[in-house]
Image (cartoon, rainbow, N blue to C red; front, top):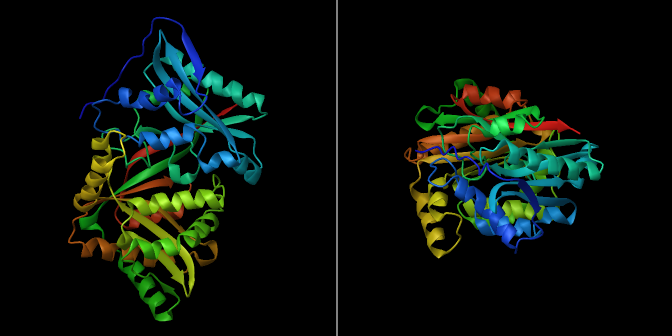
Length: 388
């Protein structure tokens, strides 16, 4: 597969233009830039253009409590870079911080254009009294974030963890940014996925006590009934993570609706402690190939293709696993791993591989569990910071 290393248009002055809303020519340039940048690249997975347009129109529930702006870099009339910057009031108030987040950073291999983009968002942040810029970081932890710095020979996991060219690292670091945190993706060969005997013993003890259970779902309607409860558990399960921020009711609804669109009920593992939801482990069929064929267009034909890909893909993506703090280390995580193994094996090994994404380097317990299950780290995304 080809890796483009496209140069920018290096003759002429770089101009930064603000994207006022999602219905202008600038908005179209903002949306289309990565499609041009990654044309014929086999590793990048495009988002749906309509979803990005909604964000540019500030129709995402994020903008009910926070603000953001979008910019493009142009030279001689050609768009050569883009970036978004957010002042997440919800995050800053919850964590007692004053930081801006950047996202949607894409650029040709053009240091001058990248510098102009980062200078603009730093200026934007200072005007609002913010003292640090962090990113790439989206509206929530479920958006995925970071610059890919290792694992360029692998395709992105849908749009959950993005792909970028190797030169992005230099463009970010040459503008005063340094590492804040790494997030790993782990590859699990499902043929070798075998829960160790130690974990099986923990599961047996848990079953005998009758406290934990993981019911099997067969219809999306069953999951829809408990969607708000899942969102509530999400808000409580990650409170100890240093980049966590609770989602609003509308953000939870959007998140769970998106999860239901790409989910298969039998792959969604919900952990109960007696009658209370205590945790979850979300697995999805990898639809990356169909998303690449859709080329950002959401229509009848692309939806049919996505449904077909859901039935034939050999990859699973696991993005989202959490247990309420009061139930951690009581055997619930072991039961989730055990139930996932049963699902993988019962599928006749149609799913040959699992991609476990967004594992923070600070989650030592999770990393240890994954090593025990036989996975290996194969991608690294880095979130950066820059003091103002």
